[in-house]
Length: 503
Image 1 (cartoon, rainbow, N blue to C red):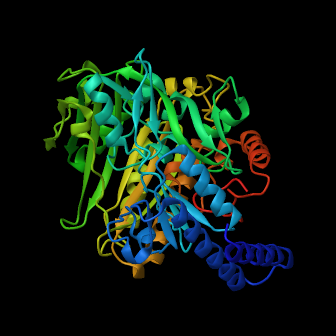
Image 2 (image 1 turned 180 degrees about the vertical axis):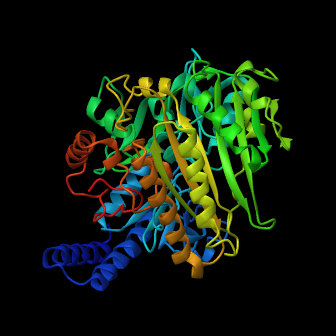
């Protein structure tokens, strides 16, 4: 390091440490962080040179991120590491300069500072996108910068699939580390339970390969503990033989809600032994038509036009159908386009068709209070947590999610997802989400069906997913986090503050 830069760094570090010790004002802390990030960007530029891997805001015109709230913030710079060694070097520079940072995989978080840093450095993983299939075709090594669509397209020519999701631009990293529901989940479990090895850059910038055998505690923590332990650069995941499959929605008049939700309950419970089958329902408000529509999405891992397990659903008159047999990469949902503000919130409960319908009714009542909001596009998605997936979650020491049902059976997961256009409506939109969640949870509790589990990838920022894992798992995660990150780099008061933090 040049003498001038070293002097600058020493002054900065002393100032930062003094600020922490004397509890100085937030504005002074922000000033220190800004100086640290300016220096960090200069050091990153010295490493990456004039290449396309280091970007400053004024010349970063092609960068996009899904959620408009995140797109509104401006980092000091954005860096695109290409290797695990690059990631370790980047993290070392950021920590040395006390610079805040965010890690972007696919960039589908709804929270500001989660995937795009507000004034710090955005570490964009998109160049780590290799897919290496093992010779025995039982596993594949996936780069943490891959999207779900990229992974599918790499594996399908080999007639293979990993346990991955249903929205094309979602990133492998966040999706997997939060749990990961898939068409393959009834058969193989959640995505996080199909990771055999993690390549992880620890907060001190050392690289470790984490397996159940080599690092059982850290392996447990990475199975649901999110980005609290360092930066995962590669996942070695289980893959399975998979050809074209049946997939797509059938749309129903809301007049058939009773029949559809009854069949959904049967698919969740008495018909769930057919693990080639997956499904979910969506109840959505169409703003332009001022109407509601109900759909049930069918998924079947075999190329069978009318699987017997869906006979009850298929007997219900539908308005239209998008069901087809194809490679999943051609069927995968493109999701809501970029440029909207987004919010999710969620709850979990014991399966009940009656509760499903009450949650729909609450949704409609709350939608009526804000339905004229520009760009408003809300829906409630209800899907099962398959009994087989809950059992698989306990293998290899168990994951951190704490999935348990009162009767040893399946669970139901409800997601409220929506977008809107303008920042002026943020307060009303957050209030809408909270009203739906609180009312739905209250009814679930009254019916004795509420479950503590919260799927972290669907949580609103003020929900506590780690509390939903159970106190024993939450405290174990905290102990592991303190061990691998004694300086608190990946805590809410540290340098990587986005997403959900253990402490």
